[in-house]
Length: 367
Image (cartoon, rainbow, N blue to C red; front, side, top):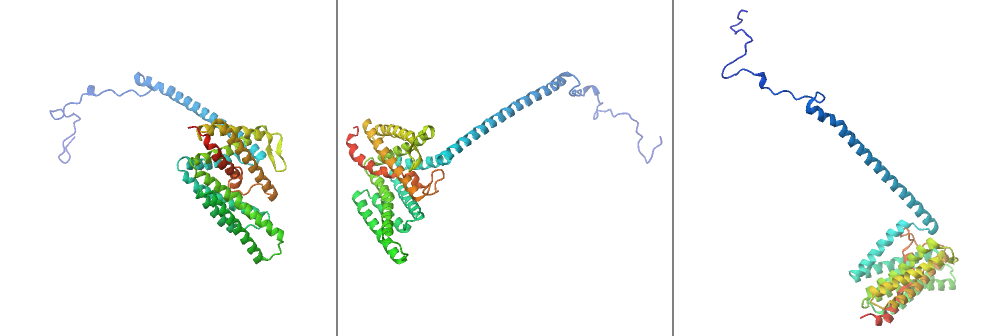
């Protein structure tokens, strides 16, 4: 082939000199076989489907186990909801909310008494004022002329007197508070002039005085008890016994209740429930007397029995009051419980016997 433009013809002979040695194909390593072509690689590739199958089987087992657990949880939830609905139909209470709110309230109360007992004072002041407001509103809804703002002012004075730890001062402030409520009601009636009879006005004054005695004064007695030596343990003890009586009565009545205790006052209270309250209050009373108050065991029986009586009478008394007013609960502030006073109905009347027993039983403390 002739030259074109001075170029050197291509001969097809590879370069072979010291700079470019000849290519030896024998020095190139062989290509590794692909899966399925034989050799060790083909054997490892054959195990891949088996390993994948095992993983799929394990995954299916976990999925089946998870579905089974979810099914059990769903069934348990359904059973619990059905049981809660039956309890709600029988007692008129939402069990879950009642437990949650009760535990939260009890935890705050116990924490204040165990760690810094004077933290109980603002709790008692707030509870006393809220219960006073609640009761005043309920009585007004029932047709009584109860002045809410004067009740709160007078109640605050009675509660603060109790915080001073002087019983005589609480009595003096209570008398002043009742007089203040009576004068306010008479003046308000003269201003309104709506034709209300003398008997109705007198009944309004008596009801107003009852509010001050029932809520602020009884709450102030608990504050006086708190101010005594080891008073926080006495407050914790009588509250725990009252709560135990209520709880055991609720559980026993729910499980075994057949015979109504006071059907015209509280149809859902039964003698079986009262038996549970007796057992719970005496048991808790003995335990608290021995391990918290450092009293003889028989002092715990006295404490439990006395608080049981006062708590039961307080519960029945509030039920009678609500029946007279034509209401089921004092309010709806505490879901699952009703109103605040619905939870304090057994505790407030127990403050007076608890204070008296703290004087009578203290000489029997184990030294």
